[in-house]
Length: 268
Ligand SMILES: Nc1ncnc2c1ncn2[C@@H]1O[C@H](COP(=O)(O)OP(=O)(O)OP(=O)(O)O)[C@@H](O)[C@H]1O
Ligand SMILES: Cc1ncc(COP(=O)(O)O)c(N)n1
Image (cartoon, rainbow, N blue to C red; front, side, top):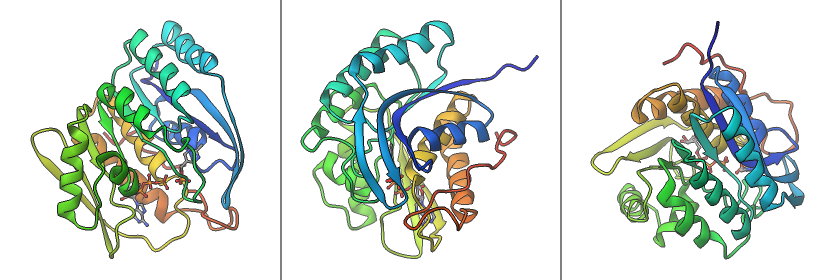
């Protein structure tokens, strides 16, 4: 009989299917882990932008996490869109109450379309409450600039920002270089001792909606399967790059989604 590792995404729903909970569950499936969700917000969204958002009540978010924790169990947990301080507080309480481990936080603030997904001014709650609980935090460049209160133009700036973020409490930091200029993109991982660089050629494509969600969900799945952090990031980068390269060309007029249906169930 088959046993599956169990993962949850605590994130927003993207009606367009390219980011948020939908991207995470598709990614979990590709890694053959059991995917669950605690939906934090319902966004009316397509490849061009977000038209409306309904936040789920903090009690119901807490309850979703409680129900799956009590019955099913969680090997690793990804956190994406949290809309405001009240939601962050509810998620914090659930993570502590149910002693959830292997927490990967993608500190989502602004969508690729420019729409705000976290209420402006509430970034500090995310940093103060959730960062100390995280096994890994995966900011992109603008998020890292905001969290570390530094400006990032060079690799040295990336390192300084990472050190600043690490001092706020997460066990490990992965700074994603997707927003840097140039033909090559470098993500940098810091485990408190060493820095590891993951460099790949930049794919010239506008279909990059949900790259951050996909990467963090893939890391979560790989951690749940028992891989080391370094291995998990390496495999997740490989998955995300392939998913960008194979992105379908007929999904929407804006930033289209990735191709998630890659079999990474045997990649360890
Ligand atoms: N055009 C690209 N070609 C290759 N890799 C990319 C490209 N864009 C992003 N990546 C990779 O995808 C991952 C996500 O990076 P990115 O910095 O875009 O995150 P993000 O801004 O949080 O994503 P999003 O908000 O769009 O979901 C990183 O590993 C990054 O290196
Ligand atoms: C529900 C939800 N979560 C996360 C993102 C970020 O993804 P992107 O920056 O690619 O728009 C999004 N657009 N929607």
